[in-house]
Image 1 (tube, helix red, strand yellow):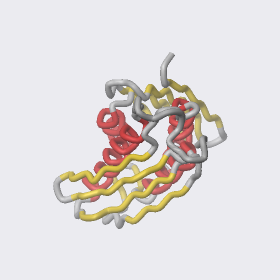
Image 2 (cartoon, rainbow, N blue to C red; image 1 turned 180 degrees about the horizontal axis):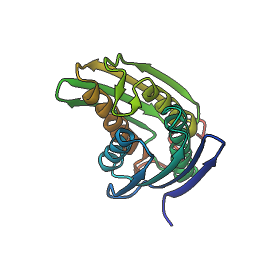
Image 3 (cartoon, one colour; image 1 turned 120 degrees about the vertical axis):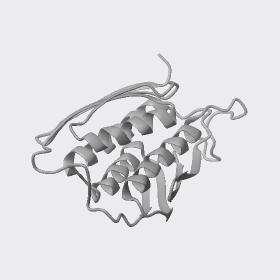
Image 4 (tube, rainbow, N blue to C red; image 1 turned 120 degrees about the horizontal axis):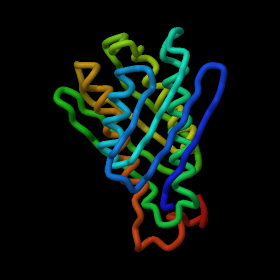
Length: 195
């Protein structure tokens, strides 16, 4: 079955199903009910080379918050599950990704310890129907669900669409790097012997 996981979450606010193959080719089937969010997750899958299915029914008549945050949590849980015992993974990943005026740094560690740092100033309040303040909530949920240390920093950017899209792509590339298998690694990459 490989490094594959399917995770679900059901609350009064959201119904979410995520399926993830870490060793995919970037195929995706995304429907969150929020057009801009779909676009971001499609880029995440394609540039991370993850096969990804995300289906969400959320209370978008209220706002985007619950859908974004809960999707981040479930997607993170899928990564955590697909990584299994983390034997042989490179563990750390990073990317400085340019997108026109935007330049984003993403760095992470699949350490099993959750930490999240975010330094970005998004100039627009909304992209399509999605409030930009929930972007941070998505990535915080992703870090929590994956039990990883995640840093995101905006180094440059004027256009909010470019900044946010560069974030999703940079994090995807860093997660791809950190989840890769390296035959030189015996067990897990830690002096503790576990992650």
